[in-house]
Length: 221
Image (tube, rainbow, N blue to C red; front, top):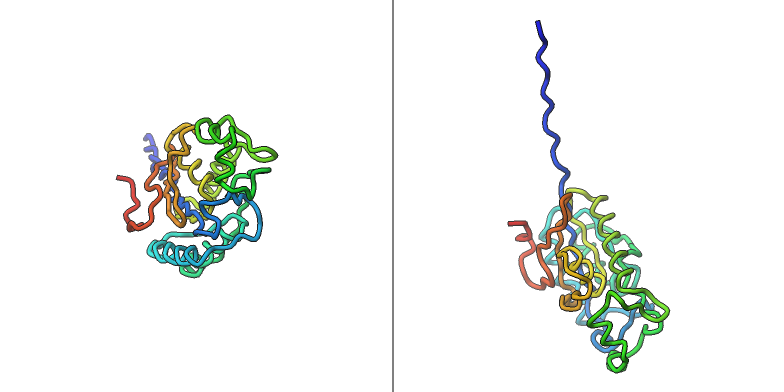
């Protein structure tokens, strides 16, 4: 008598991770200077209000497992009300840091726009390195690899990552399959939420620069 072989149950595919990328709130120098990684820059009153509002939006989600923020004050201050609303702690993650602007750190944007290199920053960022600092390509690689690592660590859950405009824009461009030279066309406003679903077959962009939508609707169609 031939024994019947037992068929193995199909293995369930790994779950996806929802990455919720939040830009820090407005500071006194937002839109006027390039603060970079300089320490001592805190949220303005408007920024604190924005942080409270995004915390209330994120609190409607039930599967957020962790909250990460870059080490700078403005990101940690944005993450603090989110952590309070969700009953969690903020985890510092250096991979979410702002681009290292080197010698351009702290300079006025009005002065930087007069530099001949400014056109390269806007038109050909993939070929530009900030004097004494990081290249846009290095920033993008750092940000994407950090988000990949966080997604794998929290598979099947949602993760909040509070970062800065350029790193978030670069991550969104990568997820969209858009060349880095076009990433300046993406807008990421203070305390906006950009959502990327991290799957085993590639990223799915669910939202970019969301400032008032119902986050519960962030599901692939």
